[in-house]
Every structure is written in C-alpha cells, then in structure tokens.
Length: 122
Image 1 (cartoon, rainbow, N blue to C red):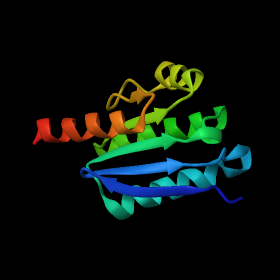
Image 2 (image 1 turned 60 degrees about the horizontal axis):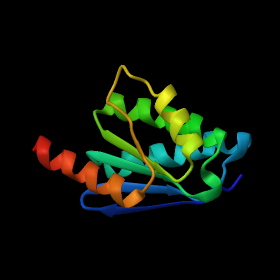
Image 3 (image 1 turned 180 degrees about the vertical axis):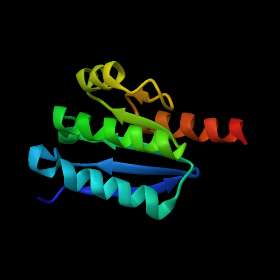
C-alpha cells in the first residue's frame, strides 16, 4: 500500500502532509512513516496536514495515535484539515491526558501558532 506523504521544516516546525486516504490497509504504513519522520528529525513541534482525500475517518485514527506518541515524546502537535467533520472528530476524540491537540482548518495558521508556541516556551 503506497500512501503519499511529504514533509518539510517550516519555522522550526516539522510539517508532514498526508496526500492520500490511507484506507484500512494503509493505516500501519502511514503511522510508521510519520513515526519514522518524528524520530529521524527529532523536532520539538509537529504539524500534520490532511490534504484533500487524506481527510478521512481512517486518517483520524492514525492522527490520534500520532498525537499520543507526540504527547509521550513531549512534542507540540497541531493538525490542519479543511474537513469540518474530521476536525470535529479529532477534537472530540483527542487524548486529553497529554499535550493538547490543536486542530485548525489552515496549514499556514497551524504552522504559525505551533512556531509561536515554541518561541513562547523558550
């Protein structure tokens, strides 16, 4: 299962964009790719962008697992997706025991707020 993922550093924030719906068969692959990027880059913050078709119920489960991973690692994490139903699902199901999951409609806003949180914490 090939899941299209890209990444970049923007204002010190690791931005991972998921371009495709991973489908049920691609969940483990997507989770492994994102985890590898987090471990490889060792960022202090992370924005996950669900682009177009990637904004699906399947991706929500992966995002929530990545959020738990980021909470354990002490990373600030935000999610950006244009899909209002996906934003509501993420907000409702996010683990409140760790670092708060910030869910926004626009990637640029998520990156700016996450970078500002880093600056304020420093």
